[in-house]
Image 1 (cartoon, rainbow, N blue to C red):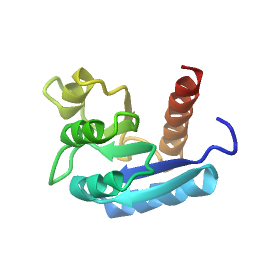
Image 2: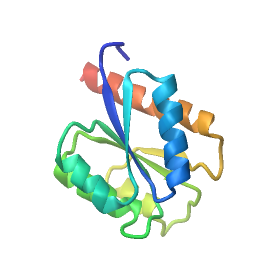
Image 3: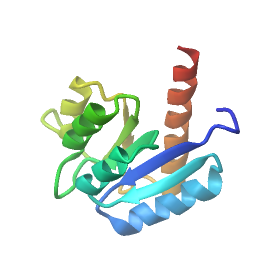
Image 4: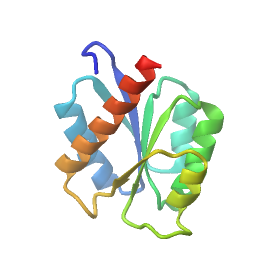
Length: 137
């Protein structure tokens, strides 16, 4: 990823402590990623509709809408936004499977399964791959 390209990442999860910790870790380690947060799907959509968001990292299980619903609404709003979904679950009826049918490409383990640093590195790799691939097209 080119140094001068800034990426605006929105992290969406109802677990405030995990979101803040991940926001600090990513912001500190990756200077070309600006991290904003939302704690529910509706707040996330309001922020996305304001513009300027390049990528969204969302949890699957949230009280107001699950990750699949949020994914669908993001894609209706701006199909160019990269969506990365976090999950600790994976069963055939799960929201991740529903979202994959609709085109979701990036799924990462949630903070219940891996360390913040590992998740930050995986997210950066996914974002880097997405934006490098889209620049080549």
